[in-house]
Length: 518
Picture 1 (cartoon, rainbow, N blue to C red):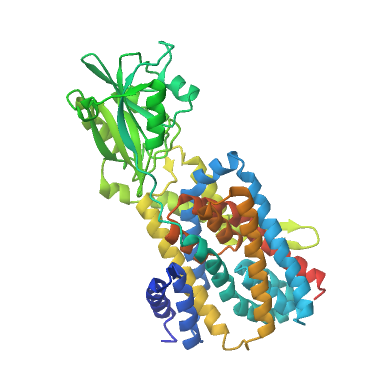
Picture 2: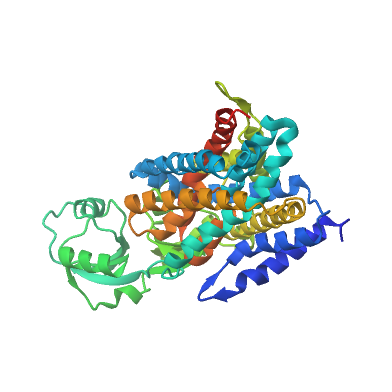
């Protein structure tokens, strides 16, 4: 088997999937099991050396898909005070740096080995590359330190998150409900629906209105009056609030009445619509129809005018019965086409990210370095995901394709990384001092991240898990958090912390070597 590294990679993926399913007191490794299965196979077959390009491409696939899907959540977080979270990576990695400086001298560990332990404990291959380049012929010492510390850099954060995540349920979102309201409390008869929503801070979606024998769809510019019966969509508490403000609950059968207006779930597959906001899609002006809810993956949510339509979204549309067929044709309504992704834009995006990663960045006193293809792909994906589309080019991935690509990329990377680390264990004597140093670095950086995150976001453990995965620049921790929470906050936290953490680790490891005068 030593002549067939791809076979070993596939075996590591399969065995890792089985290992990840083993649960002890509701704690399991999940997708991180692939990494440890890789370590096992690498130890069994130490001569196996998976292509470095395969691991890099797998991780690039993973972060590119994550960046595209989490860009909007990240922008939303940053515009609502999320910039504060950018303080966490410098403090956490700075604390790890201080531990490395102090503890390596106490434990009498050579600086070259300690630099590798720093990179391994924070699970960051680009910083190891920077260290080995700076060390020259002594670079092998850093590689051995990296191999010793790397498994702990994965395992310790997962164990730290296991306890709080025991109380987290897989988040598929609260269920939305419909309700009919008889309007009694409108004081300004000329006020539009948009004005009512803004004035009373209502988080509901108006759907239809019955006025006498007439029924019509409500847009933001529509005006409702006392005596009207309107339907709203929202979470139970929000619907109750809207009912108390506007009037009284009504037992009218308008919600199920399809004599004039009808509703339909329509899948978005038309590339000309993907990437547009609901406002720019113009369904009300074209077809007198509105979207009352969107199902993306397993989550239903109420859209706003600025909500971006993604390929694969399932829109619940209310419109005059005769217009629904035209709306279906406009949106595409093809499951087959919605599952395919645009290979042109996907390839262009990856190419731009890899190219960005090769750009030399110069820092006074430290020379030049590259952020690498992985960080480059994440940065490009965040930018393209924010843009959504550029002229005729749609950058988004369909939800199903995004999930598949990120899982494929992640397991390929974890298998390759594990096999490489397992092979190095043959040449690395078990240096207890280096092991202790690595454990201290990982523990301190993780505790600082969790403590600062808790102070800023309270009990939002999904977001904290994502931040910790980002600070560790460790996809296995992210995969563990996503498996447990299924929450978009996890990916938003990861995307927020990852780029800065990657850059800081590359810089800090070189500062460490200069400071220790290697």
